[in-house]
Length: 173
Image (tube, rainbow, N blue to C red; front, side):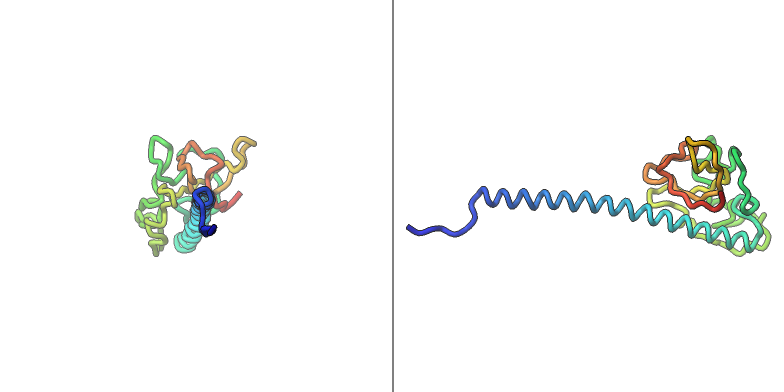
């Protein structure tokens, strides 16, 4: 009697199932890595925007929105620069001339910009970054005000909905 060499049906099904499980694990990890890369990109871009603000300050003596450098405005309302325009209390967008980064409204002496391109002001999730001089960095645990540049993060919640998902670069506490 001759023995046939090869794989049986059950053996083939087991191999296919193992390959399917491994493939699903790889796909789940790939999406996690992609999300982490977006977070790293948002942090790096916030730092680049800060560098542009420093150059704006060196040239003009002002920060975006004609604000005084390093001034925290505790509990102020309507002082944010973001893409949530009224009724959500933002003065204007980062890309607007009043912000002074991508264009000027003529009120910045010795303006030598643009300091950033408008395309650099959008985070990896499609929202514009924000600049806030009264960001509460310990929300829920009291009020600890800071000047920050940030992204609303993966959930994209806007102004008046700051949450732990936000990605921020702290300029001054």
